[in-house]
Image (tube, rainbow, N blue to C red; front, side, top):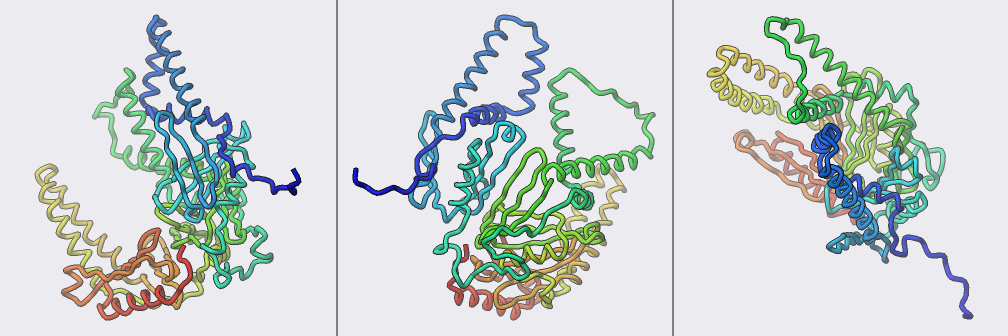
Length: 489
């Protein structure tokens, strides 16, 4: 009584549970932990077995255990923000408490899968500097809670991550950095073009996983595919089979990218980069600009032909924000937003010693001879085909030495190369965690060395440099780190 009006309290200031829909996701997580193959086999056994008393008793009992465990997991899971920490309490039989400083949260992602969109909730994932994996995940919360959490944990504070002397370079932007500005937005046509021109390796991985799953399921289920006699095999089936495998991998990769990256949009909002995408499932990834460690770009020959490329903004560990199918202007704008100079505006001139080719040939020749001797006992003269690896490796390393360049400016290090793909790596020198000069036995004999710059997201390595040049590069990087008092993360 007599007190003035009080400021509204954010829901995150008080311990709260997830949406009751999280019970469903807790249950699905428990079921998925059993294994897909085991569940498929159990389902086949259940539906093909006679309805005896044991089945009628065990099935409801298992369902009750799963539902009960999911409800208890949801009830015992609470989260809130206490001071400058995000606190999560969880555990059914054992109480666990996880406290994460807000300024150590590297990224926060919100995702709406199809089932989330049907019930109006979102999934939130947070990554920190303490692990390469997702630190914790909120399976189902309201959109308002997710937005409040993203605002309070995703936006860096001025005292820890940004200073007035370290703003985002917003050259070329039409609006102030505090207003969300769209840097890139894919149309369906360009997304399809980006999907077709990307390497279909992910499609091959998915196809391999499907073959493995069906193979294991076939071992447990008495169903066998038809066999082909050896006399029916024709040599031309091999190229046809490889072509069908390639086409299938490309189609699967295109479907994967269209579903994942539909309406692919990248925005800059103050000190944040945000990416939204997804057709059936919507995903929002947020990265604080100050926490980006290394910016990498790549182009395969097909992407070069159509003028598209990929950009990866790496933070701590395996965390990163990747952008697919951006043109030269958009690539340069994304690099500027990360606080770096576009690689097209840099002219790296440093080179590496051609002895790199000889080192690769020595290693490849030694390994090929050993493997060929062992393979001769099994396949005979066909083992000589391993000798083709030697000229192939020689040509690849020659291309690497010919096209590799590195450069050092006052604030950043850049490397650029091309063998099959064209790629660049850049980082701000002040984000260096360590710099090291290493010398192998091969390098010591020729007065060479390798310089390795370590960041929180990995290494940038420049090998086969003259020793004096390597030591000078190390000293310049160390001096740039010591002379810059801005925060590295």
